[in-house]
Length: 184
Image (tube, rainbow, N blue to C red):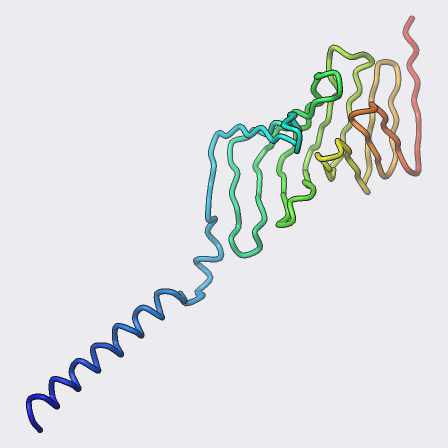
């Protein structure tokens, strides 16, 4: 074998090895590690979302926000939402955890969910449940589970909820029980 043939074979082997290396690095092996780590993580964050007209839609804050690259969902630890009503007063929504699906069209909050109407707009209304689905584009909340609504002198319990934050309307959908405690 001549030196030219040996050099050609050596260069061909180097080209094949480098091509294989580039291909392998651009298609990492799915060993589960990449899918289990968030592709971004925010700590002690505050995010203000604006609608198409530039008006505040909601403000979200919390200790941890992380995005899962596998399903493109966003997980929130103990989120706090401030949702403005038309007069510029804020409903406050808190929960143990939150989830924004990949579509981003709604938000699910779970675990000791509490939503309270603006304190300076009586009567103060408090909604408590284990789960709420928030449609922040339309300022609405829904739930299929058990819900408790309290106002001064009134406690309502039921299953299922439809709340319109802009209109300050809250409706329980079934198995409703009311308890009145009139002021003296």
